[in-house]
Each structure stands twice: as structure tokens, then as C-alpha cells.
Image (cartoon, rainbow, N blue to C red; front, side):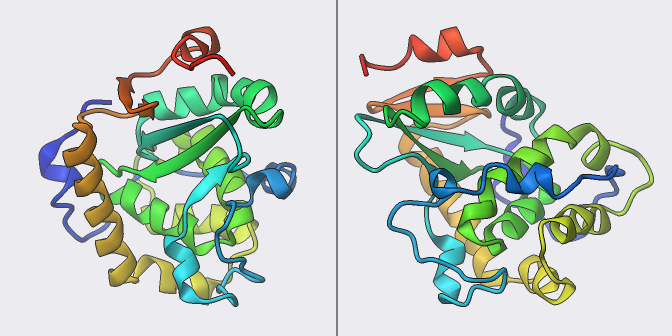
Length: 227
């Protein structure tokens, strides 16, 4: 999705009315929460409130082993339809054929294109790191219902998904009002835009080269060095 400068780096406060969410069972969140989804080297959180310390909100969110030969950085927005398609259609095969065998390490970079995406990204980072990937996957899987439906309260719809992931209302409120985390995400986004000339989502940096756009597994695989 092309980057909108006005919404990407100068995201204003306020709530955008989007997305009605249907029911998601706990299995949607728990089926991948094993060692694969735990960021390597990141502080471990024993609860959604971050018993290991608040810095875990800013810790790297990644899949795969740090010993993997290739590291892929994805720059994505949770309200980007192309990012959602990549997550639904291509990422499962990447996980199975490249990440699980230890060939690829996949690092997530928040690149919110609007206020809704920023809020969702903040909430995702308030969950224990091992739940990040399942939560983001659930958001992408239901994007048409929570991000684009009319006459819905964005904050409440994201809360419904977070609650199913085990987040308390108190923690959710802390997440969406955390100005330090909000500023940090936007600062990281600005740095990434400057460093890699990110102007659309999804974008990927592999071996020091940037690639942009949704792609299928075969096209993605061709971007990787031999692994």
C-alpha cells in the first residue's frame, strides 16, 4: 500500500470508526505460540502486563533462529490490505519451509499508515512477545471486519481481539494511552523510512536490498540468497 505522508509520520490523535469483528477462538492465537514465535534474545514476559519489565514492549519481534543464514525485515501496516494478503497467503509457507527449518529469521517492523494501524501496533506490543505473531496474524485474517466496516468503534473492536488473546482491560487501556511507546514506534518508522527509503507496504529488506509489494511464495523465495 502506498505511503501517505500525512498519515504515516504525523498521525493525529482521535478514533477512526472502522471494523466490526466476528468471533475468534483462542486456538487462533495459541496454535503458534511456541519457541518459534518467541523473539530470540528479547526479555521474556510472564504476563500481558510485562512482568519482565516495560522495555519488552520495544523489544524485537521476530520469528526464527538468530543463527539463520538470512534475515528478512518486513515493514508493514496492520491496515494495509496488501500486507494482510501476504500474511494470509504467503507467510504460512515461509514459516513452514524457511523459518521452521532454521533457514530464515523474520523480523517485524511497525510501519503504521494511519491512526488505526498505530493503535493496533501498540496493543500488539503489549502482549507477551510469544503472542505477537499469532495476534498480528489474527488481525490480518479479520482485517476486512475490524479495519474497514462502517459504524464501528475502532478501539472497542481491537479490544475484542486483544481480550481473546488474554489481555485485561486495564492492560489494554495502558497500551492505547502509552505515549512513550507511540512516540517510539513513530521514531522507528521515521528512521526506517530514511534508512531504507520505505514508501509503501509491505516492504522487505533482504541482504541490504529493499523490495516492495505483496508477492507469492515463489516470488519471495527468488529474493533470498541460497539457504
